[in-house]
Image (cartoon, rainbow, N blue to C red; front, top):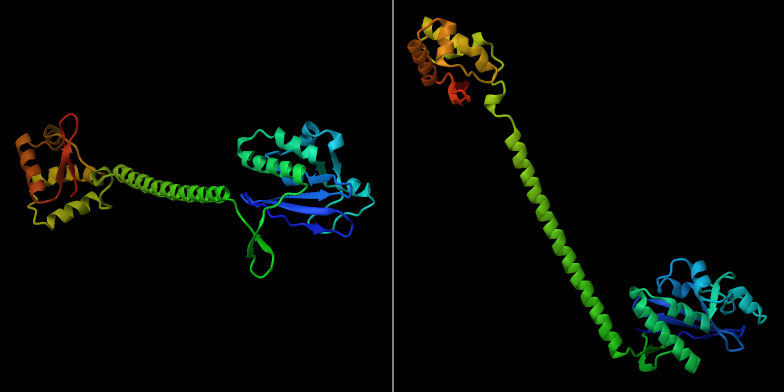
Length: 292
């Protein structure tokens, strides 16, 4: 992880350092008082360590003698509140021992990289009184400030992180494509189902004609309408106009008073002239006639 030591010597004799965790850009501030004690804002570490309740976290992990508010810490040395950088009078601080307790109390696996970095900062501060990287000969363009050398293992970790992000993006794109294909398939299937459920012509009224108008249209097809043919046609016309006629030859013969053979001949003539067509049979074997 990359840390930038941004040290400023304040006129009120408070030494302020910023440590930056390069993996997320999280900042951990440190105030060093004139007596050499170090204090750290609790807000800088709670989120990165996975704590969600500051009040409960401090009560559970940090004894009262290792935590204080900023106004009390600075006031104890007769100093004012540092200006800028979001310093507030009621800001909760912990000393070095309190910070150690917060870091050691964290057990969430997702916070382990930050925990390892914070532990390194603590150990270095305890040993050297500060924490920084060696400046390189290079300068930050436009500032004249030295850049800092990034350890190779940190650079490798960043590369791996970027590679995982790229792989995650590719996987997300692939899943989105599969989802769109599935939606298209479902849409096509629904259309097929809707089409299959649509009533067929023989199952709905085929015409707004009256039976008399239907008979008149058949005459226009040069149909030789004899009395027998007219009787059969007149009997079939109403049911044909209502979606389909399914009468046996025997039934038609009984209704018209014609012999079965004559009924059969009349039906064949109506079929040949295109006045109607057969569309299957009923379960009991009666032919089903519909308009063409």
